[in-house]
View 1 (cartoon, rainbow, N blue to C red):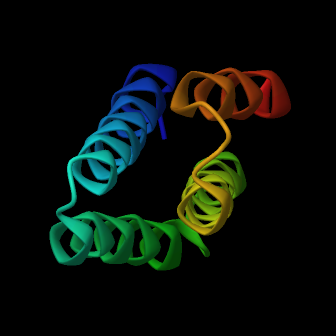
View 2: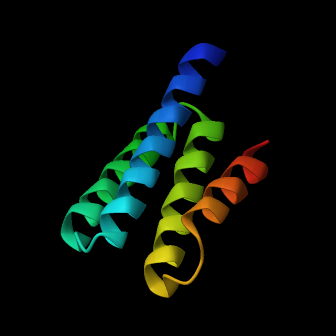
Length: 87
């Protein structure tokens, strides 16, 4: 996979994550979890293809679940942690 495609896929995961957080914060829990399901689907798709993207999707999944459980941690901090963990 080229680095340009990898970055595009990371951007798509990050976008889904951010949308899911916004939906959750606005009370649209079901739709937020639909975004999580899409992230999980991407994680499964990348499992045999690209370890970096699979790890990135797994991190997004974990960050969303942690946020959904606590709601006291800023979504910005999850994004910062996601970026720092992958690099």
